[in-house]
Length: 190
Image (cartoon, rainbow, N blue to C red; front, side, top):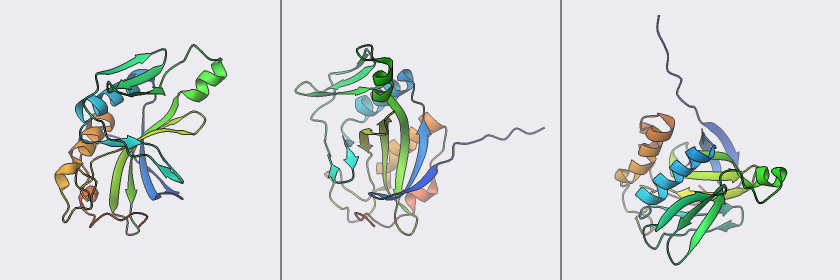
């Protein structure tokens, strides 16, 4: 008798603003989201860019320093950098009706990668959406085709996929994927 391991498979969509996107679903319970955000913001704060990515607007924010606090209170995650902070509803918020509290809270979380026209990955990230389908946050992971300063690199630096590989292993039980190291460069929209 053999037991086959069922590895998580991505859902592939064609998003008007990004193109081909492969996304792996992550758990959306409060504890899982808190651990994910703590891992991202406490371990990798100096390597990520984060904000929103919606049609017509992209906010690319870099943390000024390590967070002074990553906490959850009344369903809201707070990531505090001292001079400024942000909140995202990841659990039940008691200050709203049950229906409103449900709509505010994260209903979809995913690791994703964007593929170019030839099917090679060109960017990697983590996205959170509330139960109303609105984006709460995108975390743009280190990209081998971009320098840490977000300039186009002269040659790919595959070591910049370490965070992506770690998140795949830690949260999905997936090993690194050779496809991630098959691309030839970064291009916006292509």
